[in-house]
Length: 406
Image (cartoon, rainbow, N blue to C red):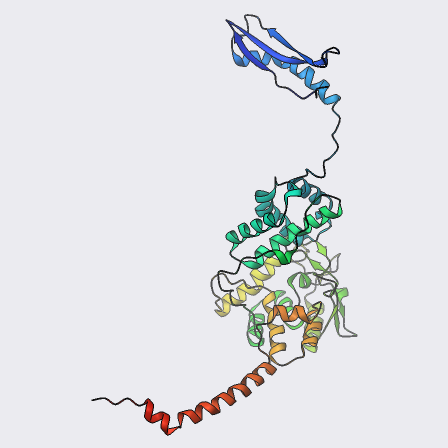
């Protein structure tokens, strides 16, 4: 039996009259087909537009009956496209992501994944398709890390699809050749202890105290804005890090990782300034946030950076190279760098920064040269230098290297 599809019919002229044609809904039991019906319109129908309007009631009746009796077809797991899987993933998985991660994933999907792979059937996502996608992304971004992040989003979606039973070839990340960085990595900008102190001094309240906490404790911006009075444990000299505010929405969530949800030390310096803040400046609010704006809401991360860090740097005349991002993380990076350079054991720095393990610390701060490296480098340089000194004093070499001029 032929499928009852929705139809739009057709109109045409026969001599001087307009004619409309469409197939009837009922099926002829003898032939198993639907008969085509032709309607000749009267002389009042004088144009194609009028003929279509005259035919429309017949089509509406047919399409209404077809829609009423339409049976949904069973989904084809083998023929599902990347776009269809992304739609399902966005509905079922994305709401469970943290706001920042969700925004990044949607950006990757909208900018790279859907335009290049949206209509590709899942069963055709072989190694060649994966490699072509990564190469195309690499041509656009010129950065290996960005290409890896975009591919990570695609991989996460496809892994979920496999668990849901869709026929998706399994491609290992180690088999993908990622693009090399074509531009040198920008120098990481951070505040050393002296510069951090100058920036903090130049800032105004409440940013001054917010920057001090970030500098001394190495907190992320969302962790600073999420601090509450209940976070302060003056008896044990600890600050409990239990939440973080999304930088765009100020919605409270958990810190970056499980390891990030941990107490940090409250130094004597912080104890003094926090007591002073609570006594003289703190404004009570329903949620108990330590820092609130004039409307009683916690601060937006961008405002802390703009009115706290950037204004202080402008006041001090501190300039940065074009394209270098300067934010609260410069304090976190600074304290980590100072600790490593002063020879603090890596496992201690890892705990202070609340990293998952020492490998994370080493990965992010591999460029830091600590005391142990400096001592080793000086010893080796000294040995080379001694030999160079002997060569320079060798009379035979001096005589052969001299040049006589006429």
